[in-house]
Image (cartoon, rainbow, N blue to C red):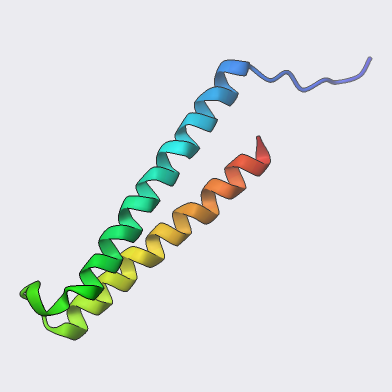
Amino acid sequence: MSDLLQIDIKQVRAAQNASRSLARLAILMRWAGEGMTATASRSGLTPAQAQSFGLAITWAADEIDRQCITIDEAI
């Protein structure tokens, strides 16, 4: 008797939906990070602070994208 992995289609769809939602969040974060970097002079932060914040948000978006890829490949 072989052990078969039983996959619940609802669980797969839930994981796919979560991955898509996170990917959309990553797009928004990347947009916000790039916007902050581009408009540093109008943000009330020093240019270095605004650039650091923008780059951190952009990095987080990229990390979310990498994790979504991992989730999608696992599904």
